[in-house]
Amino acid sequence: MAVMDKPLQVVNGDLANKAPPSFERRMYSPHSIAAVVAEMEGQGVDPLQVLDGTGLAAPQLSRHTTRVSYRQLDQVIRNALRLSGDPAMALRAGQRMHITAYGMYGYALLSSATHAEARDFAIRYMRVIGPFCECTLSLDGDAVCIAFEPTHWPNPTDDVHRFAVEFALAAHLTATRDRIGPHFAFSRILLDYSPPSHADLYGKIFECPILFRQLGCRYEHRQDDRAVELADARTHAMAREMCEQLLDEINRTGGVAADIRRILIEQPGRYPSIETIAEKLEMYPRALRRKLEAEGTSYRDLLAEVRMRLAIEYLRKTHMTNEEIAGRLGYSDAANFRHAFIRWTGKSPSDFRSATRAL
Image (cartoon, rainbow, N blue to C red):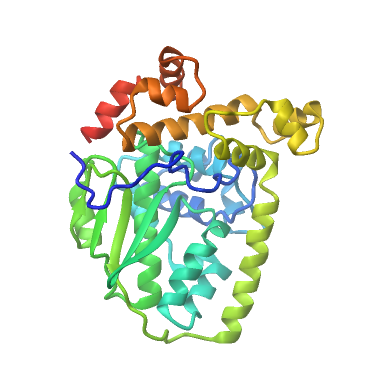
């Protein structure tokens, strides 16, 4: 049974109070893909196999002009899970993510005036690096608490979800030690899945208590608000300005799919038709459908995505019945919701809830 000491509350779903970034748009540096490819190559797996289905070639990963999408990252993760003989591969790949791999984002962290400023910067601008997980920061006494969840993989029973969490944890630890020093450590980690076969490696890497089968994911560490040795106001201002431009570009180029996600998330259970959304976006419905097709999606797919993410949140974090969840998601009855959920996850709502609570 989950024992997270501060249960998450779901208000219209904890579907991140903002819509997830575009799955299709190529907006991010390939540094995470490069780390996975490098780790797999170290296992003797040809990069061509790891990049299969992405449209990427290995030389592109070292070019500063290359931009990748979450769809390409998703394909690389699935290829790696299929090809790797090492169940801890995501942890090892994440350990390759040194702070300089993040470009200007990394240099902004290194040049921050204090560790507190660096933490705030990291959370505010995290989307510019195309993170595996979205994060939120809170303070509890002298503890810093970072809650996080995979950006595009919300199902905790899915191996891709665990891969994203493992990669993010190892990457955060590596980059923070680069910035603060090798003495930095997490004080504890809480994870929303059951212990994997390689759980013993978690203890060796993170050297702190680790709680599995929780209601969400987070890690904690003690505050350290001393001045930063490499602080440089001019470098930080320049790097922050560039990250601000990148963040603005990402927010502007999320496409109409991102706009529709936001509209749907704002109105759970009262989902407007594509015609109503088109009017809201000052477009003709036919033009909106064409734009979505160009982005590799459709209104139907986006509605299913939002419903699935909300359903997973409700089943994991509330005691709502299937009938109540069906109503919240705009289904006429629980049977229609059940059929849809099986189509999304391969499990019935009741089986999914039992599986996640038994994790």
